[in-house]
Length: 196
View 1 (spheres, rainbow, N blue to C red):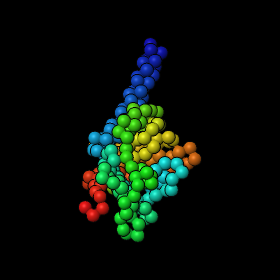
View 2: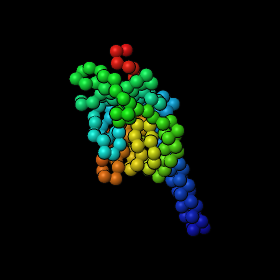
View 3: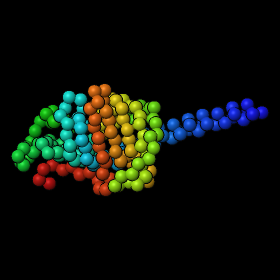
View 4: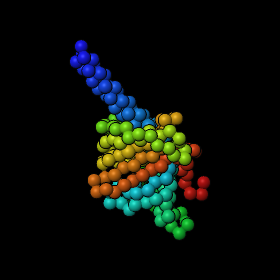
């Protein structure tokens, strides 16, 4: 009798932990799906956001999927729209070949594939931020181009429990280089050609 109770308790614990894992994975996937459904994001970025081997940056980004980006930090500012690309040099906007910029578009199919690849999600607990008092922190694995970052290393995501949107993503590659985006959902991203 006691053995049956213990086995039932262990089975229930296993089921609830499996359900918690499934819920955590669903929360992370849904947070990224919300970024896609919003049509883009705005936020503060730092680190090698354009991939390995690129210079680290720290600044603001506005991104409207699939091909509108405004990135500004202390040393670099550029705008990409469907109508062209510009870089700011000494306060003057100059048209530039899109191929010279670190990023010019987001591939929607690739982002959906990367979201589907999310696995091994671990709930790391709760946190607070200035914009959300109830965050859930997750560590996970994925491969490919997630909205805002390349997923080829260790990833952590802070999800606001109020609305299910991501508050922060932190990605680390095998060499230990980090990239962080602190999302700003207080207003829609805005990307316009210079002078508009």
